[in-house]
Image 1 (cartoon, helix red, strand yellow):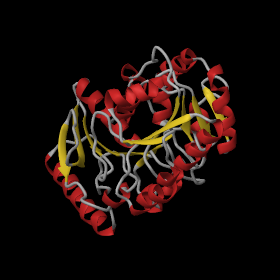
Image 2 (cartoon, rainbow, N blue to C red):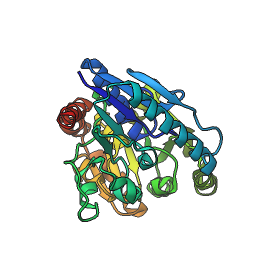
Image 3 (cartoon, rainbow, N blue to C red):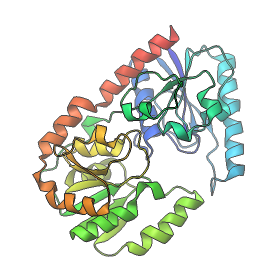
Amino acid sequence: MLTVLSIGYPFAPVTADPAGGAEQVLAHLDRALAAAGHRSIVIAPEGSDTAGELRAVPAAEGEIDGAARTKVHGAVRERVAAVLADQPVDLIHYHGLDFGVYCAETERPQLATLHLPVAWYAETALRSGVHLLPVSHDEAARAPAGLELLPPIANGVDLSRYGPAGAKADYALALGRVAPIKGFHDAIAAARRAGVRLLLAGRLYPYPEHRRYFEEQVAPALDDAHRWVGAVAGEAKARLLAEARCLLVPSTAPETSSLVAMEALASGTPVIAYRSGALPEVVEDGVTGFIVDDAEEMADAIARVDAIAPSACRAAAEARFSAERMTADYLRLYHELAA
């Protein structure tokens, strides 16, 4: 039996249906460890819901500024030290961008999944001796020369939670966290140019720059045909994805993966995405959606999206993007590193 200490990004809770990709992967792994008879210990914010043992840190209140980060990072370091002092941990697994701030000084194997672009991590964290795991080939290819990485493990989603609808509705969907790099303003522009309704859904985190983006670039562009519906989860999220005519992913970030694109494909919904990072690894152009370069091309692709078969989208998700495949790959890696 393995004992795995998983450390989430300390400003986002881990739940059965979290908003963030890193939290969703951690939740899958936590459940898979428990189901396989292993011991899962999770350090995550208050409000998290885990299958294993939760060692909670205080949730940040209000804006996540420098003072809030310092306070929460200190709490994470305390929890890590306490677990290592009295538990037979076989492996430590980090999921946060800031893992270098609370990385443990220990001889026990340590692993960090690089959920975000390699360039976004502190150099000291990348050179700390922790095993580094990318989630796509594109991400691995962007790593600095000489940086040692493990072979990628692609993300996966719970296929049982998503499935094609009996009929499509008349709206396009954009779903994700609100941030300038996620391009919600481009989704609105593309939908307006294509003459289709658009629903925008996601979570607005209390970062000043995210709030400013929403207030200045997203909210003023909304109207009766282009609506903001806020955060969604569970059945509501599954229904939105299944009934959407298409999912728009106008991200300008070098995406390492896209769980929402995988969820859309599992729902039988084509994806129209920018040519950013690993998105072309997820969306097969002309088969499960379209890869485009700007809002104008996205609008043109919306007009052609009915040529994409929902059955082809679902088949791709079943073949490549299951959570069962992902967790099996991780458990094999855990055993290798622990040995």
